Image (cartoon, one colour):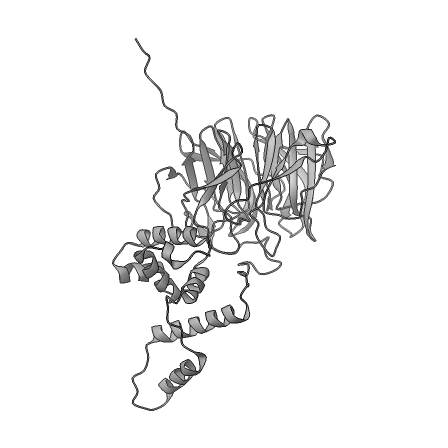
Length: 437
């Protein structure tokens, strides 16, 4: 972890305030700055210290001596003395909170020096979100390349989405009222939504891939709490649904991508455990076949295709998130290993989405174990990741991410509540030069 010297004086002030348990609003009032400025400073602090949560900021403050830590004995004596009928001036409620919080943090540092953040979701509940419905998701930053556009008609997380012929189709997902099969179509040029024919089997923890102008939606987690193997196909031109051969096994929370005219499903949850499997769907024969598995089991990863190569990014296995990136080349099946390890992301991300624009892969959102302060962009030519600003500062997971010709679109997800937020990122600019005389 970086030393405190990498932080500015203002950032150190904010670190001290976070360690006392102050909210962004309270920090802004105390330092006479705006809440948005506090968020920007926090984003920079997270990046500089290579951490993901406010708790880690507080632990850093204790370790570096930025906040005063009382020993347990005197603290207990002082708190007890306040309740006694003596003339000593009582300590403030804020000071009591600070002392108790620092006691907990010091105990953690002494007894569990290598402790990791506990998952936000309790064991066994990582497949279900809870909360209210909100049109926007989390504290939003005003950024040059991100633009907030018409929100989804229905706030939802754990949904599937594809881009086809100038339209984005969002399918299924989890809502405040339960699992849905709703399908909604977004027209970026008109910034408008319209409702389409619903998916016959409502599911969440699901993905989709575009193949020959049709949308393939495999498996998912159904409304009755079971994982299914059913595969349904949506025809956007006819606004109709049909069936395809079911997967060999029931799966949800998988990563999915299309390449070379076929669809590939990676990892996920089979109803009893996370898996590392790879399955290929061939639309010409309407059959599924098992391929070389990933190096380790996980779900809630994301997959994106560039030049016929698929990149499987991040993931979550119920205990921890991953920053790992594996490259899958379908053409290498039967000719050696089709898998190759690539540079990891700078942050662990589970429940993220990815999309490819102009030969770069964009990883957006994710996070079970803390706040993520930025998104990331991958360049396969250099095998390097770089940071990309985020329109939502904080938790933002189980969203849908798709690419149009020049933009990355991030839709829905969970930010503590179900969000209907619809953000688009201008990944590529097109310039028109005047003709020379």
